[in-house]
Structures are given as structure tokens and as C-alpha cells.
Amino acid sequence: VVHDMVGEEVRAVRERVGMMDITAFTKVEVAGPQAHGFLDRLVANRLPSKDGSVALTHMLNRRGRIELETTITRLSADRYYLVCAAFFENVLMDHLRNHLAGEDVAITSRSESWAALALSGPRARDALSACTDADLSNAGFRWLSAQDITVAGHTVLALRMSYAGELGWELHMPNRACKAVYEALWKAGNPHGIADYGSFAMNVLRMEKAFKGARELTNEVTLPEADVMPFVSLDKECLGADATRRSAKAASEGALPWICAYLEIEPDGVNDGHGGEAVLRDGQVIGATTSVAYGHSIGKILAFAYIDQAAHVPGADVEVVIAGTPRQGRILSEAAHDPTSSLPRTDG
Image (cartoon, rainbow, N blue to C red; front, side, top):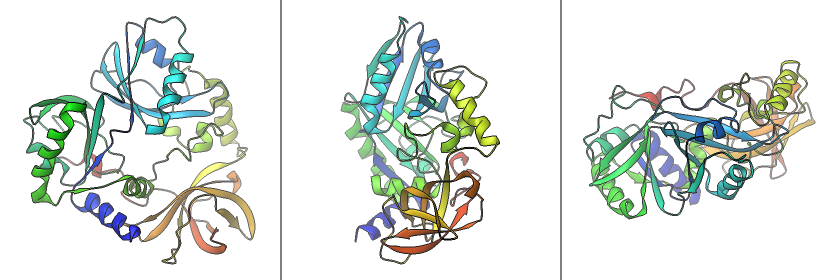
């Protein structure tokens, strides 16, 4: 029953428009005259350089292991807004506070005072445009950017991004505004088949898009091992940079202890797995899965797995042992859904 319910929510987002309450996400503001320099020495990617720009980045420890992944929105030259998974609230706050070195910076959690909604799907622009006078076209509101817009009489910080891999926005606002904004979006989305979706569906959506999550991005692995190098600037200095460069060199030499692979697995209609399943090649264990989910848009089970680097050959066949039974699998080279990432950039 849950499997079917999740499938309905996934299809709503992929085919129409879905809305998710993401208020539980960690939301932190870093502000002050030295906010840029402070954050810059803690993140592996370049900070957004223009007001209203958004970047995805990672924070590391001194050994180059991943502490967390976060988006950073530049609100102004001395004010930044960080958003990451709900269970990283304490990790993020502690990491920021523990690495202050006397900078003139204020670190403020907005997690309890601010709410947030995610609006995702091919009809997301139709629903949102009925609630605001803002220009939501690509020219007026580009991908990976942020603007203050008005919805239902409330000022909302809108981020054009989508963890679902579709056209979409995240809408962040004070708690008091959320009910009115939600109701306005629901009413505007009704003609377009809007539906609520939850965390199980979100997990499926991100797996179909090959977006890594908390089980992949841990403090046991480096950025090259996690295979997230498109979001890394190797030539910038930050906490963990030297270790990251050493790991990148090892990756180029085929000498990593493991690497994160993206797999599709044949379903049996009964058990999709839970993570931690052994991955085999030619009868030998080469690694284990981290995240596993049935991809309702794909008709296959999708998984991430840390495997021997030598075994990481796109297109290669593997076996994944689910509930004691080996299943046929294959290493993928790109996202199962929208591998060119054209859908989030859809114009209108």
C-alpha cells in the first residue's frame, strides 16, 4: 500500500506539480562584515559571487572527510542563507561555531522561526505564477537564483532549485506566513492536478536523479570517493583542501579505497532493499549499498553503493543481494531520469 502511495506522489511531481512541507530543513543565516571570508575557508566550492545566487557545496573536516552538504544563497555581500537536511542542524551550527577564528560574524538558526515549502513539477510555474506578480521566466528568474517575491500578501524568499530534479522553487518564509502561502498555492495548483508529496517520494525522486544524500555523504569518505567533484573547486583553499587534493590524485591513479557507484537493479515486486546490501561481481563482494529505492518513473530499483574503484565500470553487470537473493544489477553512468538536467531549466 505504501509503495503505491509513494508512486502516486512521485508521478504527481514528474507529470504535474507537487508540494512538500520542508520546514524541518536546517536553515541558518551567516551575516557580518567578515561572513564571506569565514564561509569561504570552510566550503569546498566557490561561494556565490552575486546577490541572489545559489551554490551547492560541502563542508569538510581536516582529513577531507565530508561533514555535510548545504546550499548557500548570497542575500547580500555580508549575508548568506544556508539550507541543508533537517538532521544536520546541530552538525552545521557546531561546525560553524567551532571554526570561528575571531571573525565579526553572527550565526543565527532560522530553523524554528522560518517555514519552507517545495513546489516541484512541470506545472510548478503555472501554479506559482497565479499567486505572484514576479516574473518567473528564465529571463526573470534564472535557475539557481533567489528573489524576494510576494505570495498571498507575504514576502517569501524564493529559491529556484529542486531536489526532485524538476522545474521548481523552494519558498522560505516566517512561520506565520506558511498557512496562507500553502493555501494559495494549493488553490492555484488545483487546475493543474497539484498533490502533496512526502519524504519517501522525495527519496525516490532524488534517487532517480542520482542526487546523493546523507547515507552517501558521510564523514567516512572524501569528495572524490563520493564522486561529487563537479561541486568542488580544487584550486581554492579551505578546511580539508589538501586532503581533498590528495584524494583526487589517488582517484586519477585508480588508487581510491572505494568510490560511490550508481546502480539499477531488477525488481521482484516484493522487496526493494533497505541499504547495506552486498554488491558482487563474478561472485566476489566488491562493496555495499547505501541508499536504495524503487524508481517509479523508471521501473527499476536504484541504489548508491560504495564499491572497489577498479570495479566501477559504467555498464558493467553486478549482483546485489537483497533479502538473501542475488539480483541482477548494472552500474549506470548517468541519472536514470533527465540525465542532461534540462527539466529544472525549463522556460516559460
